[in-house]
Each structure stands twice: as C-alpha cells, then as structure tokens.
Image 1 (cartoon, rainbow, N blue to C red):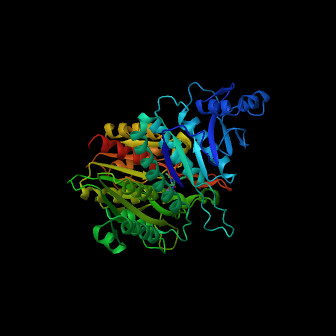
Image 2 (cartoon, rainbow, N blue to C red; image 1 turned 90 degrees about the vertical axis):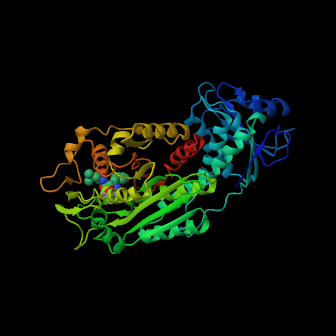
Image 3 (cartoon, protein in one colour; image 1 turned 135 degrees about the horizontal axis):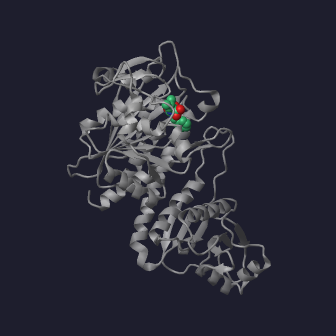
Length: 499
Ligand code: BES
Ligand code: MN
Ligand code: ZN
C-alpha cells in the first residue's frame, strides 16, 4: 500500500475511486459539493431519495457518475457535522476502507482529510488515515489453508491544503512507521504459543537487529540469570520445558551520549496460571500474555523505521507459566535479584515476578525513565474495560507525559493511584512481601508490588490487559497492537521537546 499527498484538486482526475464524506441532514463536504456540481446534482438527488442519509459509517459506492472522471465515487456517511470526535473520525476511515476492500479499485483518492475533527489539524488526520487504513487491511491468515485473497487496493492519495504540506509529510511518515510497529506487534501476539515461545521472541528480536543497523540485541540465558540471582523470574519459568530468556534490545538513533528510555515488556508466552491454574475459559486468550513484550519489539521497530534521534532500550523477560512436578507451589519463598524475598501465594500472579527482576536489571542502564508494559491483571478490565490502559507511576511528570501522548495518539491511558495505603495488602508473615494483595484493588496492588523494585528511577507501569488484545472467547479474539501508538507518541514528543 502506498500513500501520497496532493495539494491540488483531484476530482477531475481519472482514477478508480474517489472517497468523499457526506454529513447527515444533506450537508455536503467541499469535495461532495464539487462532485455534485459536476454530476448535475446527482449527489443531492440521491440524498433526497433517502437511499443514503449520511449516517455514521454508512457507505454507498456509485459507479460511472456522469461527468465525473473517477470511475467510482464512494460516499461515506460522517454523521453530524458539528463536534465530530476522534473516535467518530477513525470509524469513518475504517468503514471507508471496509467498503473499498469489497471492490476492485486499486488507485484511490481520499478527500476525508477535509472533514473537521474537533481540536485536530490536517496532520493529525493524515496520520490517522494512514494508521487506520493499514489497520483495517491487516489480516493474520498464516494458519488458514485458504488464504484471504489479496486486496487490490494499492495506492491512496490524500488531498491536503498547501500550507499543511510539511506537517502532513511528517505525519504520513509517522503513521507508516507506527503502523509497521503495530503490524509487527500484532503478528507476534497472534502467533500461538507452541510456536511463539521465549526462544522465538529472542530470534525475532535478533532479526530486528539484522534488519536495522541502529538496533543491537543481547539475550541472557537461564544460566546467566541464575548467576545474577534472578530468583523470581526463574521461579515462574521452572515448571516449563521451554527455557526462559531475558531479551535486551537496544536502539541507538543518536550519537549523543544520552541516558536511555527503558521499555520493559511482560513476555509470558503462555499463562496457564501454573499450579494456581486458570479455568479453561480463562485460559483461552493467554497466548496474548506476551503482548507487553510484543509492544516493546514493535515500538523499537517503529522507532528505527522513523530514525528517531534518541536512545531506547527494551528489556523483555520471556517465560512460559506452566504447572508441573517441578513447578513453583503456593507458599514457596524466592529471592529476587534485588535481594528482597517474596512469598508466592498465587502462581497465577506471575507477571509481577518476572517483571520485578527485569526492572531491577534495568537499573544498570541508568535510564532517564522506565515504562513497563504488561497484561498484568484481570482487575484492570473490571475497573476500566477494554478502551483504556491503566497507568500508575512514581513520578507525576512521567504519568502526565503518558496521559498527553495517549490523548494525542488516541491510544489512551487513565491514571490510578499508587498510594502507600495499598502497600499493606502485600504483607507476608514469612517473607518481605507476598506476590498478591487480596481481592480489592488488584491493579493497584500489582503496581505496589512492582513499585518496590523501581525506587531508583522514574517509572510508569501500563496495565494493558484490557487493551492489547481482545480475548472474549469464540472467534472474537485478536491483538490490537496497542499501546505501540501511545509509546511512539511519547517518544516523538520527547524528541520534539529536545529531551
Ligand atoms: N495474565 C494475567 C492477567 C490477565 C487476565 C490478562 C485476563 C488478560 C486477561 C495475569 O498473569 C493473572 O493471571 N493475574 C491474576 C492476578 C491474581 C492472581 C492476583 C488475575 O488477574 O486474576
Ligand atoms: Mn497469571
Ligand atoms: Zn499473566
């Protein structure tokens, strides 16, 4: 798929299809106005007939309109003109692409950049058209005997006002880079765990290092971790026949000596719960328990594509959480890399056990800030549902940066408190702490646990159990690639601020 920008009026151009928006109440966008004029009121006549009302996500494909050079005109309903939100805009894009997919159109002109979105400029719209179009074309069929037939769509030209050209060019590049990261993250996440195990993740990371000269990878093996004393991480992995890996991936996009941003991603390639085993229903979807890891790899790929002038490290603890004769048992006590001891009361609270050692390990990079990304708790879905990730942080300016990047990228986060009061829930009579904090405030107590390993740096935790993948069972299961757009926006903002 190719994207182009054009500052001229393209309605008179021969092409396979032109995409134009129509609001409810027979209100035409400027391009719809022009097509209407060329075709001697064909659009208005159609609206009068009531066939097409311009309702949100409604689409209608018109063929061979008289006097209109493009052979097809795709009308896309945009709903009410006033106060169009980001979400509505993104839905308009997606529905237009879904309609295009059903046709043979290859070269397309889209005028959807002209639709007003509250508080958003043309560059924002360009970026989202690119991201959402490619997202709508995403398909994971490598395990299907019958492949989906390739979509003929090959080029989309976006019309933009002249004065936005340089900002729009940047936005286009960003959209493409972000989507390449999202795509990579989704592919990794959608892979079943009999293929995508810790070794596979390490190989994929090395593959990135081969492709991008600014990326390097180092993988710590089980014996290395034993030597270091990563007792918590190793405890989770000990029931599995598949060896654990600690993947350290580094992106250096600047020659300047700069303390890195560290991204730490939970890489549980399958979470059975261990001996505190999950029910069959709850276990379906647990191949997605490595979405944090996939997000780190996708974000580094996108940063490398965009050649961001900064230093980012990714730390990925990768394990499989299995029950077995040699698995950890409830009430086992382990010593973490930090030296703090942990009583494991629930083997299904494994994410925090691998993350705590990975976070301690991150200290050696002397990072400016550390963000961990994890499908950590079911409780976050109860609290916030599927639309927003939770952020908890020991440094408010970092949380604020993430909140702002979330709004900008529309890959949003919502802050939860990390107050001292909740720490008491982690008390153990036998060890420095327990790995679970009881029924209430599960997302917060999980973060409280992590906070005990992040005292030496600015840190934010993203709980993405509700946003990284949909795991509703049945056929409604898919990875979203979130929060790659959020993290990319955060990194881009930092570059723009010269940080
Ligand atoms: N990977 C799960 C969290 C999860 C649940 C992700 C649902 C996506 C969808 C995590 O390892 C887990 O099992 N958490 C437990 C914690 C509990 C034992 C304190 C949970 O949420 O039930
Ligand atoms: Mn678990
Ligand atoms: Zn888990």
